[in-house]
Image 1 (cartoon, helix red, strand yellow):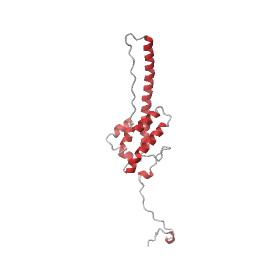
Image 2 (image 1 turned 45 degrees about the vertical axis):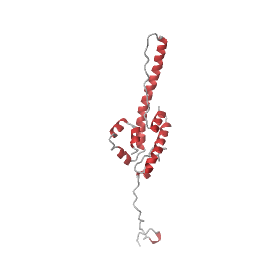
Image 3 (image 1 turned 90 degrees about the horizontal axis):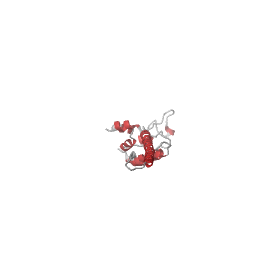
Image 4 (image 1 turned 90 degrees about the vertical axis):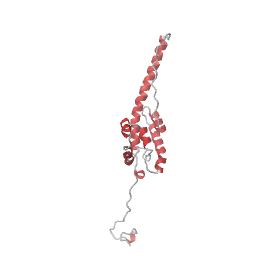
Length: 172
């Protein structure tokens, strides 16, 4: 019988109970620092991690959708569907022969408002894309982030803050 027995009755006074060395796995110990998403994290290596991917992605998309950021609904949809929004610049009206001046001025006024809205959406998307990139990375343990950085297109993803590419790559 070991002097360091697990049974307290037979343990030598002052002896420390031996504990099996445990190596924590990233999926069991990593918690996000984002309030409300602490348990919603990306991992890799097991079937459970692959199955949790959609749940985590959906939770992040819903989180983004609740933010008061300009264009957060568009960003939330983009993350949920894994597709960037299609933003189409409005076509500037051209004055054709026989067009009434007042109608043309009204068409130009409408176009100016549509163009402002388009520029606002583009600006919001650029801002939110960077936010989502960082939010996705906050949901990744260091081991996964290290793995992502080994991807051939990581430099492009990182420099353009392409959160959807980062998220897609985490499906490894």
